[in-house]
Length: 420
Image (cartoon, rainbow, N blue to C red; front, top):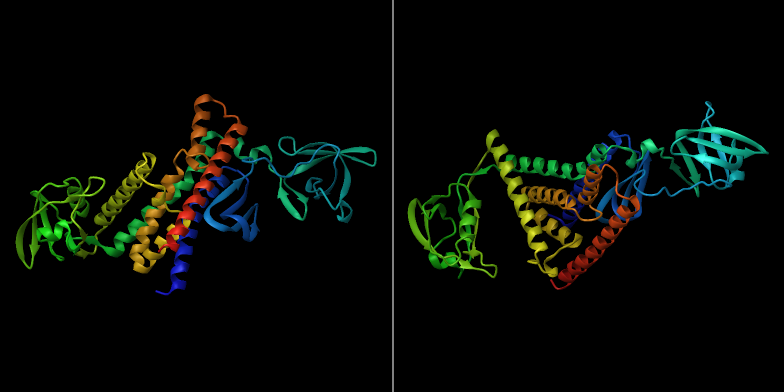
């Protein structure tokens, strides 16, 4: 596989995972009637941008996530105050469709005046003093404010994020991670259909000098039972039994060349006290029926979820070192390795990453979806929202800390690449 093909697959994988997540936010925000100002893939400077309907779609420089910017989540950038000179354009119904804040003398077919009163959230009216006369105009709910060459659609209160019920807001937030979960399920489903199911557990390789090699295990052996427990096609069961029996003699029954051979194996404990025998396992496969596809998908989702949650637990309790963590560079590197291994491996990795992204975003870490849902839960219990300024500060600090962590792990990634 060429380097260009690998790079394209890595980029496509990132694009799909982030897009499906942000689309979950976007779609359910739109369903709730929230004005979505921007749908962005990546952070930082814009590389590409176009506007369709009310939303601007952008591709940004830094491939470390994405965002959906909803009206009312942050203070509006453009403000108009009494005493300010503006120009307005009306439609045939007499409603303001454009509110110009600069270059007033260059605007054609407009009314220019000094703002006496303006309310773009509730009453949607603007009162201007024009040649000594006060005139009041209704404002169209989708009117545009124009300044410095750019247009910003106004956001009446009923189009803002905060105007919606807790349930609608929570749905627009939680559906980002949910879309990642659904994508993971679909990808695992496809993987089982493509690869089939194992009919046995076979030793792929046996590392020389390790416990399995010393006990007499050979590549190609089919494991029938361990400690009188049938293994069948259950690779996870064999792995668990090995890990749970460090430095203990285990009675294996293997099939080799048509003969059944009993072998005593003593897994050696690693630094974490987990049993290891130095083998890689696979197995013979056949096409999966409908029931096996469903059960296989379920097992893959549950097993991967447990693995991800276990890694988070180890991270929280300090069982990982900083050097063990990887950022976007390391993720791209591992993704490239899976891409070179073949499509089935890449699908497995994509499903695992999608599951990880969904779970990670639900953690109650400031700036993540889980933290926002936590604040909504507090609001539901209290019957009133948390002070928006305090919540915004929590998310801002959380985002800054996440970016700092991202810089640190990316630095580690680069050092790892330089050092080989």
